[in-house]
Length: 375
Image 1 (cartoon, rainbow, N blue to C red):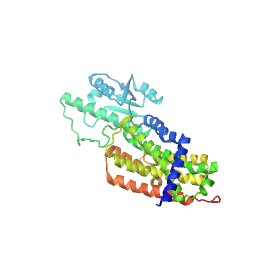
Image 2 (cartoon, rainbow, N blue to C red; image 1 turned 45 degrees about the vertical axis):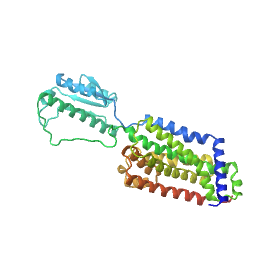
Image 3 (cartoon, rainbow, N blue to C red; image 1 turned 45 degrees about the horizontal axis):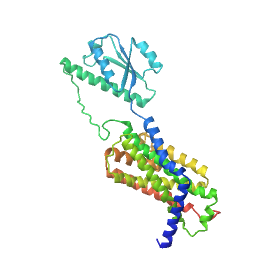
């Protein structure tokens, strides 16, 4: 790059920086929106099943049933509610006052240690299939833990065909927030990155200043870079705020290196800014560009990135479509770096995908940009 090109590029960057300072809406988008959206979704979205209201029906109370009911009461996952009979519990279940029923029949203590018998009955609300599976697992966990403790106190040997020793890696606390917040950062920064640049060219057309740019000696490549640099700095500032909130507001551990996170974030920001710039070049209208950027970024990132819904469980056609969603690659990187550490095969393969997408979006935006009024 020669001296004249450097001067033109510096001038373009200075002009866009002044534009940002005069119109602080871009600063608000970069720094305020991530904070608001992270607080909103970080505290509002949870896949944990805690304090589940559970109906307990004990037909013949004794020491064993009292011990089992107490075990459910001591669990952080349940709020047991006592009912005199199963009909009352079913009415509460139908009215959705409780989300499950544990029914201890009259001969519970007699059948307790009988081999091959099932001394308790369990009914679970299956309207939300995911919550139903989680609740079922928690009830089984409480039941097996209590049964193991009970037989040990009675001196009875409980024979089981397989002894399980579960070990949970990467998210030992099984906090859904540890899994959701990194993915949420990717979804939010997709939206913010695209919104930051979706207005820049459209604004020039609406205000009539594009004609002034056309008569300057600046080249189209310099115009693209000059418009990207100030918004890249803004976007990385917003990313830094989001990561800081994940670490200190939501207590999400960062097991990978900061530099892996920074480099992958920079690549993703280029993709998001390139997509926004492409939308701005094509739309040439700020309102239309803003609407397109929201529809084209937020919904696909939210639904098809693996942020909440597992991509492997989607239909095959939808799985193929997810490959054109940039957030898919960044979600995989963030969840790996935050929870598992620097697993380079995952980080590098997704970084390569982000580089390809950045080149495609910026290349198309450059080709669609012309210094002619009739283009």
